[in-house]
Image 1 (cartoon, helix red, strand yellow):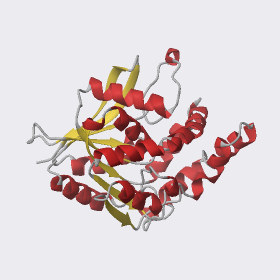
Image 2 (cartoon, rainbow, N blue to C red):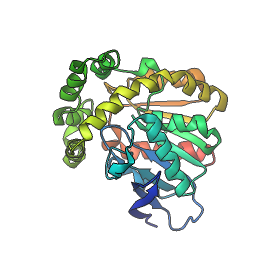
Image 3 (spheres, rainbow, N blue to C red):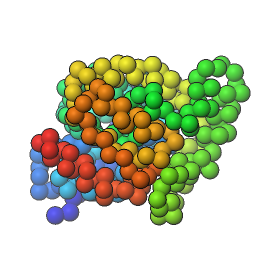
Length: 294
Protein backbone atom coordinates (compact mmCIF):
# COMPACT_ATOMS: atom_id res chain seq x y z
CA UNK A 1 0.00 0.00 0.00
CA UNK A 2 1.33 3.45 -0.88
CA UNK A 3 2.31 5.73 1.98
CA UNK A 4 0.43 8.99 2.36
CA UNK A 5 2.55 12.06 1.72
CA UNK A 6 1.91 15.66 2.68
CA UNK A 7 3.78 18.91 3.12
CA UNK A 8 2.50 21.03 5.98
CA UNK A 9 3.06 24.22 7.90
CA UNK A 10 3.18 24.01 11.67
CA UNK A 11 2.21 27.45 12.99
CA UNK A 12 2.80 29.23 16.29
CA UNK A 13 5.99 27.30 17.01
CA UNK A 14 8.60 28.91 19.24
CA UNK A 15 6.91 32.32 19.60
CA UNK A 16 5.44 32.70 16.13
CA UNK A 17 7.79 30.70 13.91
CA UNK A 18 6.06 28.68 11.19
CA UNK A 19 8.03 25.49 10.64
CA UNK A 20 7.55 23.96 7.21
CA UNK A 21 7.83 20.19 7.20
CA UNK A 22 7.23 17.18 5.02
CA UNK A 23 5.62 14.11 6.47
CA UNK A 24 4.46 10.70 5.35
CA UNK A 25 3.11 7.61 7.04
CA UNK A 26 1.97 4.09 6.15
CA UNK A 27 -1.85 4.10 6.14
CA UNK A 28 -1.98 0.47 7.24
CA UNK A 29 0.22 1.00 10.35
CA UNK A 30 -1.58 3.57 12.54
CA UNK A 31 0.94 3.30 15.40
CA UNK A 32 4.06 3.37 13.22
CA UNK A 33 7.26 4.47 14.93
CA UNK A 34 8.61 7.91 14.04
CA UNK A 35 11.75 8.60 12.04
CA UNK A 36 12.88 12.24 12.09
CA UNK A 37 14.97 13.48 9.15
CA UNK A 38 17.19 16.50 9.83
CA UNK A 39 18.74 18.23 6.83
CA UNK A 40 22.04 20.00 6.40
CA UNK A 41 23.57 23.03 4.72
CA UNK A 42 22.65 24.39 2.22
CA UNK A 43 19.51 22.31 1.78
CA UNK A 44 16.17 21.70 3.51
CA UNK A 45 13.63 18.91 3.84
CA UNK A 46 13.61 18.97 0.03
CA UNK A 47 16.74 16.82 0.09
CA UNK A 48 14.61 13.96 1.48
CA UNK A 49 11.96 14.08 -1.25
CA UNK A 50 12.95 10.61 -2.51
CA UNK A 51 13.89 9.01 0.83
CA UNK A 52 10.63 9.92 2.59
CA UNK A 53 8.32 7.62 0.58
CA UNK A 54 10.79 4.74 0.88
CA UNK A 55 10.92 4.95 4.68
CA UNK A 56 7.20 5.72 4.99
CA UNK A 57 6.33 2.19 3.88
CA UNK A 58 6.85 1.26 7.53
CA UNK A 59 7.49 4.43 9.56
CA UNK A 60 5.96 7.83 10.18
CA UNK A 61 8.52 10.19 8.68
CA UNK A 62 8.86 13.86 9.64
CA UNK A 63 11.34 16.24 7.98
CA UNK A 64 11.30 19.90 9.10
CA UNK A 65 13.12 22.88 7.60
CA UNK A 66 15.42 24.66 10.05
CA UNK A 67 15.12 28.45 10.46
CA UNK A 68 17.11 30.09 7.68
CA UNK A 69 16.47 27.18 5.31
CA UNK A 70 13.72 26.00 3.01
CA UNK A 71 10.28 27.41 3.69
CA UNK A 72 10.28 27.89 7.46
CA UNK A 73 9.25 31.47 8.21
CA UNK A 74 10.52 33.69 11.03
CA UNK A 75 8.51 36.79 11.99
CA UNK A 76 10.76 39.87 11.67
CA UNK A 77 9.76 41.07 15.13
CA UNK A 78 10.93 37.77 16.59
CA UNK A 79 14.55 39.04 16.44
CA UNK A 80 15.68 35.44 16.00
CA UNK A 81 19.32 34.74 16.80
CA UNK A 82 20.73 32.35 14.24
CA UNK A 83 22.82 30.02 16.37
CA UNK A 84 22.80 26.25 16.69
CA UNK A 85 21.45 26.62 20.21
CA UNK A 86 18.48 28.52 18.78
CA UNK A 87 17.93 25.94 16.02
CA UNK A 88 17.86 23.27 18.73
CA UNK A 89 15.31 25.20 20.78
CA UNK A 90 13.11 25.58 17.70
CA UNK A 91 13.38 21.87 16.92
CA UNK A 92 12.41 21.04 20.50
CA UNK A 93 9.37 23.34 20.29
CA UNK A 94 8.41 21.78 16.94
CA UNK A 95 8.55 18.26 18.36
CA UNK A 96 6.53 19.34 21.38
CA UNK A 97 3.88 20.89 19.12
CA UNK A 98 3.59 17.60 17.21
CA UNK A 99 3.70 15.63 20.49
CA UNK A 100 6.67 13.61 19.28
CA UNK A 101 8.39 12.22 22.38
CA UNK A 102 10.27 9.21 20.98
CA UNK A 103 11.94 8.80 17.62
CA UNK A 104 14.77 7.40 15.56
CA UNK A 105 16.61 10.10 13.68
CA UNK A 106 18.55 10.52 10.43
CA UNK A 107 21.10 13.30 10.74
CA UNK A 108 23.03 14.95 7.94
CA UNK A 109 25.54 17.81 8.06
CA UNK A 110 24.01 20.62 10.20
CA UNK A 111 21.36 18.20 11.41
CA UNK A 112 24.02 16.40 13.46
CA UNK A 113 24.94 19.16 15.96
CA UNK A 114 21.30 20.25 16.25
CA UNK A 115 20.21 16.72 17.12
CA UNK A 116 23.14 16.07 19.44
CA UNK A 117 22.48 19.28 21.34
CA UNK A 118 18.89 18.06 21.74
CA UNK A 119 20.17 14.65 22.84
CA UNK A 120 21.98 16.29 25.76
CA UNK A 121 18.60 17.65 26.88
CA UNK A 122 16.41 14.65 25.99
CA UNK A 123 18.60 11.54 25.79
CA UNK A 124 15.72 9.14 26.39
CA UNK A 125 13.74 10.51 23.41
CA UNK A 126 16.19 9.18 20.82
CA UNK A 127 15.85 5.47 20.08
CA UNK A 128 18.45 5.24 17.29
CA UNK A 129 20.65 7.46 15.12
CA UNK A 130 21.47 7.13 11.44
CA UNK A 131 24.25 9.55 10.57
CA UNK A 132 24.82 10.28 6.91
CA UNK A 133 27.89 12.51 6.89
CA UNK A 134 26.73 13.99 10.19
CA UNK A 135 29.93 14.68 12.10
CA UNK A 136 30.76 14.65 15.82
CA UNK A 137 34.57 14.29 15.83
CA UNK A 138 37.34 16.75 14.99
CA UNK A 139 39.10 14.26 12.74
CA UNK A 140 36.01 14.25 10.52
CA UNK A 141 36.36 17.92 9.59
CA UNK A 142 37.62 17.91 6.01
CA UNK A 143 39.43 20.40 3.76
CA UNK A 144 36.26 22.36 3.00
CA UNK A 145 36.49 23.79 6.52
CA UNK A 146 39.85 25.55 5.94
CA UNK A 147 38.37 29.02 5.13
CA UNK A 148 35.73 28.58 7.83
CA UNK A 149 38.36 27.71 10.47
CA UNK A 150 40.14 30.95 9.54
CA UNK A 151 36.81 32.73 10.02
CA UNK A 152 36.42 31.17 13.49
CA UNK A 153 39.86 32.37 14.53
CA UNK A 154 39.45 35.97 13.38
CA UNK A 155 37.24 38.99 13.93
CA UNK A 156 38.40 40.65 10.72
CA UNK A 157 35.81 41.28 7.99
CA UNK A 158 38.17 39.79 5.41
CA UNK A 159 37.59 36.24 6.67
CA UNK A 160 33.81 36.73 6.71
CA UNK A 161 33.98 38.06 3.15
CA UNK A 162 36.10 35.08 2.09
CA UNK A 163 33.44 32.67 3.32
CA UNK A 164 30.79 34.78 1.61
CA UNK A 165 32.58 34.56 -1.74
CA UNK A 166 33.93 31.02 -1.62
CA UNK A 167 31.36 29.01 0.31
CA UNK A 168 28.11 30.82 -0.38
CA UNK A 169 28.31 30.87 -4.17
CA UNK A 170 25.95 28.99 -6.48
CA UNK A 171 28.97 27.22 -7.96
CA UNK A 172 30.02 25.90 -4.56
CA UNK A 173 26.47 24.77 -3.80
CA UNK A 174 26.40 22.73 -7.02
CA UNK A 175 29.87 21.36 -6.28
CA UNK A 176 28.74 20.14 -2.84
CA UNK A 177 26.06 18.08 -4.57
CA UNK A 178 28.11 16.71 -7.44
CA UNK A 179 31.67 16.30 -6.12
CA UNK A 180 32.52 12.69 -5.42
CA UNK A 181 29.33 11.33 -6.90
CA UNK A 182 29.50 8.34 -9.25
CA UNK A 183 26.58 9.80 -11.17
CA UNK A 184 26.86 13.62 -11.06
CA UNK A 185 24.76 14.01 -14.21
CA UNK A 186 21.94 12.06 -12.57
CA UNK A 187 21.58 14.59 -9.74
CA UNK A 188 18.40 16.56 -10.33
CA UNK A 189 19.35 20.20 -11.03
CA UNK A 190 16.40 21.52 -9.03
CA UNK A 191 18.23 20.35 -5.87
CA UNK A 192 21.22 22.68 -5.96
CA UNK A 193 19.32 25.32 -7.96
CA UNK A 194 16.61 25.60 -5.28
CA UNK A 195 19.22 25.70 -2.52
CA UNK A 196 21.20 28.44 -4.25
CA UNK A 197 18.08 30.52 -4.83
CA UNK A 198 16.91 30.22 -1.22
CA UNK A 199 20.39 31.04 0.07
CA UNK A 200 20.25 34.35 -1.83
CA UNK A 201 16.99 35.60 -0.33
CA UNK A 202 17.32 39.08 1.22
CA UNK A 203 19.23 38.81 4.48
CA UNK A 204 19.85 35.09 4.24
CA UNK A 205 23.52 35.28 3.31
CA UNK A 206 24.22 37.07 6.61
CA UNK A 207 22.19 34.40 8.44
CA UNK A 208 24.35 31.68 6.90
CA UNK A 209 27.54 33.55 7.78
CA UNK A 210 26.35 33.80 11.39
CA UNK A 211 25.73 30.04 11.46
CA UNK A 212 29.14 29.29 9.96
CA UNK A 213 30.71 31.46 12.67
CA UNK A 214 28.71 29.70 15.38
CA UNK A 215 29.63 26.23 14.12
CA UNK A 216 32.83 26.56 16.13
CA UNK A 217 30.69 26.19 19.25
CA UNK A 218 29.50 22.81 17.97
CA UNK A 219 33.11 21.65 17.67
CA UNK A 220 33.73 22.80 21.24
CA UNK A 221 30.78 20.61 22.29
CA UNK A 222 32.11 17.49 20.57
CA UNK A 223 33.39 16.10 23.91
CA UNK A 224 29.87 16.44 25.34
CA UNK A 225 28.37 14.72 22.32
CA UNK A 226 30.89 11.91 22.67
CA UNK A 227 30.06 11.54 26.36
CA UNK A 228 26.41 11.20 25.37
CA UNK A 229 27.39 8.35 23.06
CA UNK A 230 29.36 6.60 25.78
CA UNK A 231 26.63 7.04 28.39
CA UNK A 232 23.64 6.17 26.23
CA UNK A 233 25.17 3.56 23.89
CA UNK A 234 22.45 4.63 21.47
CA UNK A 235 22.24 2.35 18.41
CA UNK A 236 24.02 4.13 15.57
CA UNK A 237 24.46 3.50 11.86
CA UNK A 238 26.95 5.73 10.03
CA UNK A 239 26.26 5.78 6.28
CA UNK A 240 28.96 7.96 4.77
CA UNK A 241 29.79 9.29 1.34
CA UNK A 242 33.49 8.49 1.41
CA UNK A 243 34.47 11.23 -1.07
CA UNK A 244 32.99 14.03 1.04
CA UNK A 245 35.32 17.02 1.41
CA UNK A 246 33.30 18.51 4.29
CA UNK A 247 33.06 15.49 6.59
CA UNK A 248 35.58 12.77 5.83
CA UNK A 249 35.32 9.02 6.54
CA UNK A 250 37.50 9.46 9.62
CA UNK A 251 34.44 11.06 11.26
CA UNK A 252 32.38 7.95 10.53
CA UNK A 253 35.00 5.55 11.86
CA UNK A 254 35.40 7.63 15.03
CA UNK A 255 31.90 6.72 16.23
CA UNK A 256 33.23 3.24 17.07
CA UNK A 257 35.52 4.77 19.66
CA UNK A 258 32.55 5.64 21.88
CA UNK A 259 29.95 3.27 20.40
CA UNK A 260 31.74 -0.05 19.84
CA UNK A 261 28.60 -1.60 18.30
CA UNK A 262 28.14 1.21 15.78
CA UNK A 263 27.76 0.12 12.17
CA UNK A 264 29.80 2.02 9.59
CA UNK A 265 29.07 1.80 5.86
CA UNK A 266 31.15 3.84 3.41
CA UNK A 267 29.39 4.59 0.15
CA UNK A 268 31.05 5.39 -3.18
CA UNK A 269 29.53 8.86 -3.07
CA UNK A 270 30.12 12.45 -2.01
CA UNK A 271 28.51 14.77 0.54
CA UNK A 272 24.95 14.50 -0.77
CA UNK A 273 25.03 10.71 -1.05
CA UNK A 274 21.25 10.57 -0.76
CA UNK A 275 20.79 12.19 -4.15
CA UNK A 276 21.88 9.04 -5.99
CA UNK A 277 22.05 6.33 -3.32
CA UNK A 278 18.58 6.63 -1.77
CA UNK A 279 17.49 3.05 -2.36
CA UNK A 280 20.67 1.61 -0.82
CA UNK A 281 20.46 4.02 2.12
CA UNK A 282 16.79 3.23 2.71
CA UNK A 283 17.51 -0.50 2.68
CA UNK A 284 20.33 -0.04 5.19
CA UNK A 285 18.12 2.09 7.45
CA UNK A 286 15.20 -0.34 7.35
CA UNK A 287 17.41 -3.32 8.18
CA UNK A 288 19.16 -1.37 10.96
CA UNK A 289 15.88 -0.28 12.56
CA UNK A 290 14.37 -3.74 12.24
CA UNK A 291 17.41 -5.28 13.92
CA UNK A 292 16.82 -2.91 16.83
CA UNK A 293 13.09 -3.72 16.86
CA UNK A 294 11.97 -0.26 15.75
